[in-house]
Length: 412
Image 1: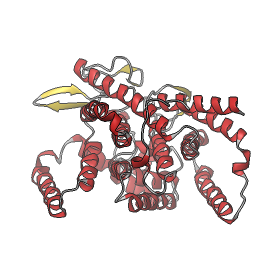
Image 2: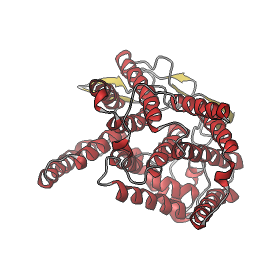
Image 3: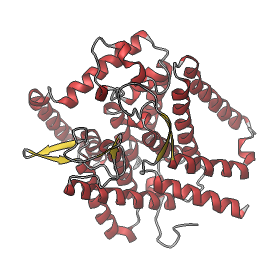
Image 4: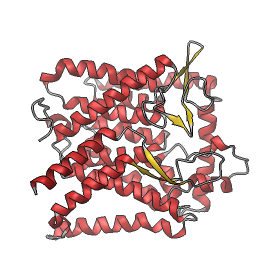
């Protein structure tokens, strides 16, 4: 049993380290948009393989954990079965069973991630250290990529390398100059930004012994976040910081009001920007789809079905999900799943509003309003499971305050 436990810990630790690396096997390319469609194609991620191996080995040694014992255990078991059936149901009317099955597989990997964290297969301090280590590397890679205007071959668009000269690469304009946004090893800077937000939240777990290191890590991760150019992630983090700040309520209202006023006054200058107009068109498609097919078009099917819900002739680069995680869940899995997903987020927000874990909850909930990767891309889905496992595993919300890191025991 000791050997089995150690193997589970090693596999789970490796999975945390490789979460940022988009290494996968393409099993089936789905869609006819003219280029690789990551939102519908059937893939097997390296991190998912490690996670599922760790989970199944853990389950092998803890079979009794799956036997419903008391009344509370039976209730939890019933809820788990019910949610599983709701997840599987939309597969019945999905046009492409392989694409739908791939989506379910990604969510099963996320649920396994949640379970491994809840069961503390590795101590909290080890999970935090491993995650901070791998994300610090990602931030440094992002800084180097922006300075060189090249992804170093670590990020690609289809088969093309990401660079400031590539028309499909994500860029930002500063003082009239165009710069490549930080990718790390992720498929898009926004996904890197989401992971960096979680890493910054985990910094609050470091004890006073790590004070100097915390300052350095804050600078590295913060610069990396800024260089992703992810407006949703940066604004979400600032809102969380404002809410948790100890300044008076009047000052918070003044700062929030000033920010809102600036947005309103500058809106005429950027309302026609591509990131606004593109999102607006996707939103209209999403709402039309929701009205005409409220039971869902099927998991991983938004991009496969979106042309049927608009009179516009979509170009290959326009085949992407609506930039709202809650709407996307409702569009693909059915309106009932969208409602459950939104209510779950509100429940977490209510329970963690006055706790340090707000730095984890609020930014991701806000990012979900402006982006889709948390429920559409394998790495985003795994991040959702990772954070949900951390939060639900520490219902008192004190995990971010109570975990004191010691450099002596990295691996138990």
